[in-house]
Amino acid sequence: MRAPIASRLSSAYVLLPFAALCWAGNHIIARWVAGHTPPIGLNSLRWSIATLLLLPLARVHLKNDWLALRGKLPLMLFYSLGGGALFSTLQFMALSHTVALNAAVMNSAVPVLMLAVSWLVFGDRLSRLQLGGILVSVTGVLVIIAKGDAATFTRLSFNLGDLLLLLNMSLFAVYSSCLRLRPRVHPLSFLFAVSLISAVISLPFWLGEHLAGNPLPLDFKTLVAIGYTAIFTSVLAYIAWNRGVEQIGPARAGAFLHLVPLYGILLATTLLGETLQLFHLAGMALILAGVWLVARR
Image (tube, rainbow, N blue to C red; front, side, top):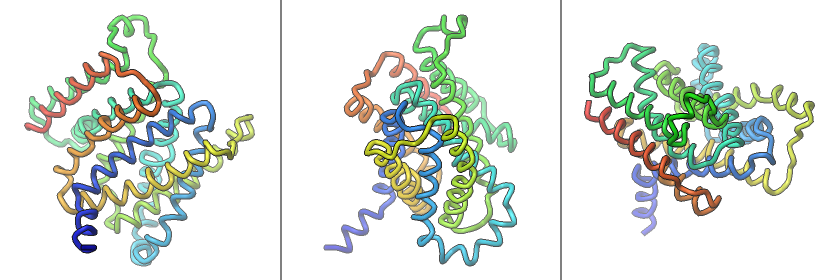
């Protein structure tokens, strides 16, 4: 009986929903420690611990991949900022100023933003239907930022956290779209290198945060946040995601990203007591409609 159970647990249809759940939980954790745990310190320890956890898994592959990684150091620095140090710090900062529900719902727009970046940066061809889908999804994001009130744009009274979320999503879209340029190395080697560089980049900024009078409290709440973001968000989710993509391909795997907002809504309303508003539903409907148009090509 063990073999069939192990086989089912290693299926893409288990691994990909698990990865989405881990990433949705990151929004909840970040909101839970907002105002208590400094974002740069949390991010720095997250990547430092993730690096230590990944080392024994990646070591056998690094022997063959190290030269390739070192030869693409500027590109690896870019990936480590866009998908690691800067990306996750901005996320923690954003959720100090806005609710986890906003992050969860707006996350649905990432695949569409990736398509837009691929069009702008690499000249990927888009149909009129896909361009229309991008506009519809972006409109959904703006509905959430404005909280359903169009007058927000005339007053320029935006929530800082929502603007940081939009910047964060755009940054991740650029990172993801540029993955086509990454060195041809094993996924664990690549993830280890991103984690290591992210940890190193974050250290001086963590020191500055500490010296500015915002020390990291090593209490229960902070340790839970560090443990979750290091183990589940940074290691297990990526390993599960990479394996799932290998099994069914990126096109089919991409659909599972839409579980992130679903999980996020369920977790934010049950664990944090946040209220699902009409503008969340309207924004998500527009975002998913845009995704549907983009998928039709």
